[in-house]
Length: 172
Image (tube, rainbow, N blue to C red; front, side, top):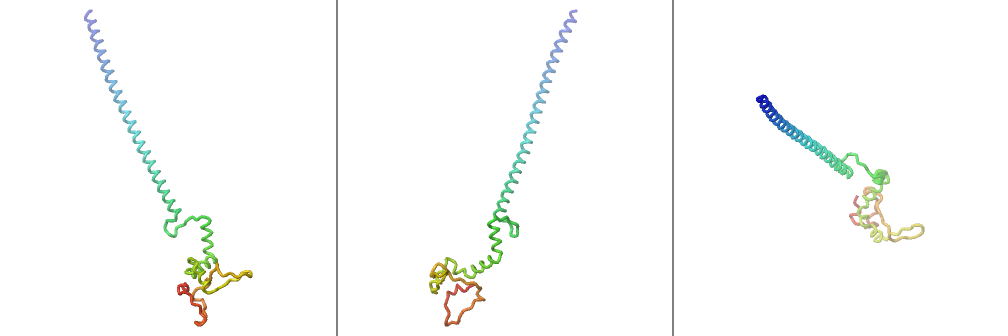
């Protein structure tokens, strides 16, 4: 029965060697799978980060574009004819300017632009010797003479009684 003992010993050795080989192969397979999973996790993480960065940059780009367009819109730099938002003060000024009072004031400024610039019209008052009586008091300075009609409607006396004004004052 010696030979049965040797066979059992040999079989036990083979079994141990086979189990060790299987353990080694299992360990290699597990290591391979762990590396493969780690690689996939890294790939998924990188892919997710790239997508997140793309979304973030797109959002920032759209936000910057909208901010820039909003700034242009607020500054009124869009094409003429486009609707613009006005402050209450600007809306009131525009409304006044389009009414009869604003048109009248615009005409007065146009007809008297030379004299009203730097208040040159005050010199005309002195040169003409004009006095203004208000509530029984006479003023000799601090006011202007201005044109209230356009050039084509103005009437002048004959040359003998004419007061000569500088030629630039008679322009429209």
